[in-house]
Length: 170
Image 1 (spheres, rainbow, N blue to C red):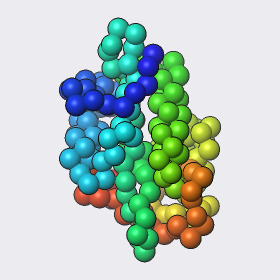
Image 2: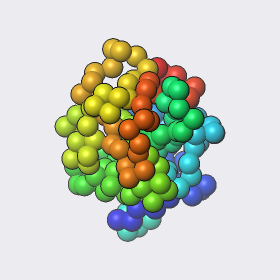
Image 3: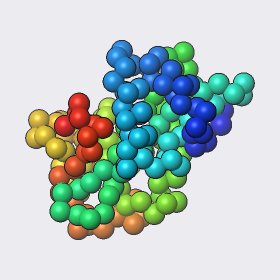
Image 4: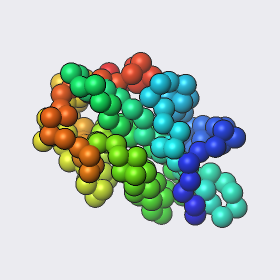
C-alpha cells in the first residue's frame, strides 16, 4: 500500500471511497466542498493506494479558523477506508502520514471531531485541554480533540470557526 497526495484524476475514486464507507453522501459531498474552498490544502489530501492502483482510503486536512486568531489550524475531516479494507491499519497509516505532512508544513495544530477510542493513539487529546473549543457547546468534550504540532503556541486558543463547507457540523 502506498500513501500519496491526491491527484486531480483521483476525485471520482475518492468520492467512491466515502460513499462506500459512510451511510450517506454527506462526507463525500464534504470532500468536494472543501476541495472547492479556500481552506483546501492539496498536499494534505492523501489517498491509500493498493498495489493494483486502486484507492482504498482517503484522509483530508483543511484549514479552519480560531476566533480571535489570524492563524489557521487544520481540521481532520473526513477520513474513510472502504469497508472490505477496514481494520487492516489503513486508517492509522493515513492518519500518521497526514500528521507527518502537516508537521512538515509547520502547521501548528490539528483538530478532529472523531472517535475517542481511535485518535488518542496519535496524540490527540480533548481540545479543551489546550483552550480550543468547538463551535457548539453540545459537542462531546471526549470527541472534540486536538493534537498540537511543533509550531503550536499556547496563545493559539479559542473557539474553532469552521468554513461554510462544514455547515452540517456547526
